[in-house]
Structure formats: structure tokens, C-alpha cells
Length: 218
Image (cartoon, rainbow, N blue to C red; front, top):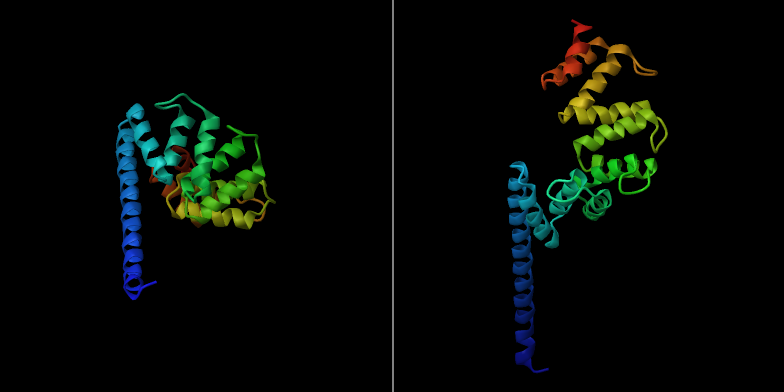
């Protein structure tokens, strides 16, 4: 190879790398734009318009869009209700690390929707989503530990995950904690102060059950 070609080769490699980066960023931007448009349609309950936007974004590799396609099939909005199709899209996004989709995979396995019921598999997905910061999954995980669904019963771990969910604003978790501390449960000591704290948090979000339980303290 001539000296001239050797000098040019690194520049060609650098140029091609730059082109690939630009193409990658453009494709991602296009997917993000379609996803945002789809979410706007979804919030306005224009589900038929939302679906093609999500579909286009999903083809670009947008995992949030893949998850939302699953939601549309799960709900039967804009498309025919189809649990198997919903599960297919949830799994695609979940395996790519999308926390919301991982939570839905937990629900699908727990309830046997679009797939055989499998509490152990549900627990696995809830654990992945909870670890990734998804609030609802933390609540589901707390319930799984409390009831022994797909895992051994463990009250300490249940309280840990309920608390993580409650701290993130999940009213169900706040209400559950409040109720557990109000009456005590197995190895959970009765604690009126903690009960009032969490029930008030839920009541502040207009949870009627929490309001009723608060009356037992106040």
C-alpha cells in the first residue's frame, strides 16, 4: 500500500464513523418525534391516530413506543383487544430494558393474559422493573413478598418495597403501609404514627379508603 493511501485511510474510517453516528442520531430523533406525537394523540384519546405513530417509532427501535403498542392492544384502544399481541410487544420492549413494559410483563404473567399464568415469571419481571425504578412494580413486588406469589413470603422485603413505592407517590402502597401499621400484621409491629403518616399521604391524593382508615386514628 502506498504512503498516500495509508495517510488517507484513517480519514476515510473517521468520515464513515461520523456518517454512521449522524444516521443513528437521525433515526433515534425520528423515532422520538413519532413517539411524542403518538403520546399527544393518546392523551387526547385519539387512539386510532396514535397507533401508526407508535408503530413507526417502534420500527426505529423506540422501546417506549413498543410498550405503548402493547398498551393499545391490552386496552383495545385504536386496535382490537388482543392480549397475545399485547404480550408480544411488551416482551419486546421489556427484554430491551423498558421498565414499564417489564411491569406489564409481570401483570400478564400474574393474570395469565396472553400467556399461561406463571407467578414465578411475574415475580422476575416485577423485580427487574422495580430495580429499574418503576413505581407500580415496586408495589407489585411488595405484594408478591407479602403473599408469597412466585417467591417465598418475606414480610421484611414486602415492607421495603411497599415503602419504596410509597415514597415515589404510589397511593396503593401508602394505603397498604398505613393499614399494616394501623393494625399490625404478623411480625409488623403496630405503629400509629407511621400509620397516620402513610394514610395521610394517600388521603392527600384523594384516596377514600385512606380517609376512612384515618378516622380510626383521629
